[in-house]
Image 1 (cartoon, rainbow, N blue to C red):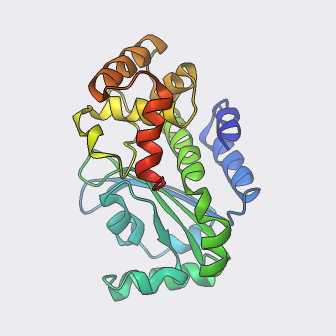
Image 2: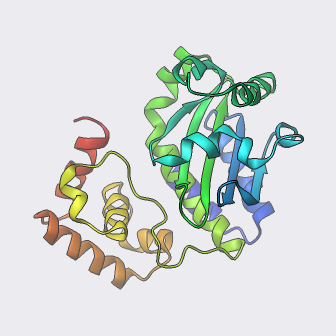
Image 3: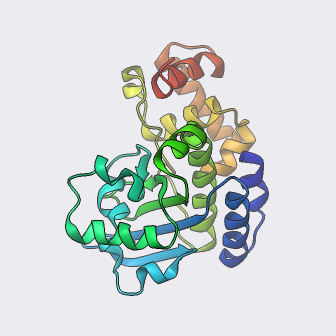
Length: 245
């Protein structure tokens, strides 16, 4: 999926990028794709890209359960009506929204934040399937980290094309990391996460919007703080925490 995202980075307009994103994700079993971001609480200045725009005809962005509940951490959240029993805290309005999505074929999915509530701008992707809970957990959930990386790269390109490039802030901080990584800065964490996922320094530089030299400096600093010598040793820290190995 990284190669798919890398190719899509060549898109010169948001419309062309979005069309390619939807096509690629449908090839990987995703039936509905929603990208939504907003500023502040209550949400304002929303950006919405969706394969089911009718879902938002009478619903403002702050009423979307994804923005309200999924963007408080970088954890990937199972979404859709199939997972409603796991989210008893949702109010009637949120449950009704999920019910309308279900009627459109969004039964199960991934809620993938790319920026958290509390920042200048927050939001991310909600990727939906028509699978029931058991089939989704069996065939799709093991690929959650692949979808996360794809979404991160697409999010970065959307920001660039919309004139909202992230500047010095990290694009995303990896979730559930070893406590040993607490010593790292947010940008060091992002760089280590991307390198551990197998990206080259050139690819990580493009993802982060900084130079390869700066990537190398962040990596060198992070390795020193972690007491590791290379990306393979850093990857063991990442995978050990995220995948439970």
